[in-house]
Image 1 (cartoon, rainbow, N blue to C red):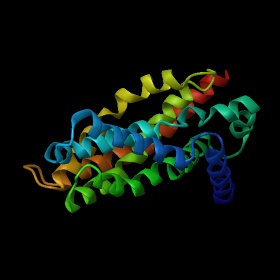
Image 2: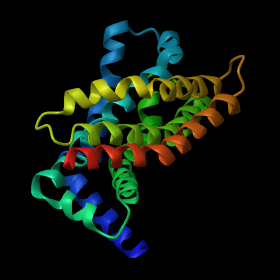
Image 3: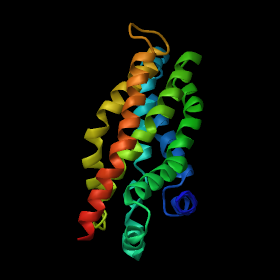
Amino acid sequence: MSAPLLALFLREWRLARRIGGGGAMGVVFFLILVTMVPFAIGPDLNLLARIGPAILWIAALLANLLGLDRLFQSDHEDGSLDLLQMAGTPLELIVAVKALAHWTVTGLPLVVAAPIFGLMLALDGDALLGVTASLLAGTPALTFIGAIGAGLTVSLRRGGLLMAILVLPFTVPVLIFGVSAAAAASGGTVPFLTPFLILCALTLASAALAPFAAAGALRGAGE
């Protein structure tokens, strides 16, 4: 079973780069959002440093949504989704592999770019490490949660906005503990490990549960 899943991962990785889910687009969108904030609130370095982790996390959340609506839609349009459902590999594993491939293309570049963009927000070294670690631990949860929305809207031609409306409320816990962990890294009353471990638990829970929910949504769309 590992060989078909590896082949599927490589296929999805290549397709994600071609159909609008590429890492370059996400990083550029990430950069635009981070760049606009200083123009909106002014050149107060202390204020930027204080709200910098929240800005980076919100920007990463929005950038991560790019291309998620196409996670299953292209397969649905060309009939590949029906073939994947009839394959011997469980649909839940297929969903998990597709979500992981999407994260490596869109989420991982955001994690790499976050320390560079954090310098634009006057974050110190500890804060940069905290933001990077929290994004590395938390962005997979955003992708797996987004996979559920992508499964629910797979049959809609323009379901991107609806998918975002469905997904964003469920990403609030990840956002809260991600920002808390990033902020705690540069000082605070809460130790860094407390929100960081909760964030890791949310990612593990989403990785375990979201493929089943998304697979159920895909089966329902095919009936």
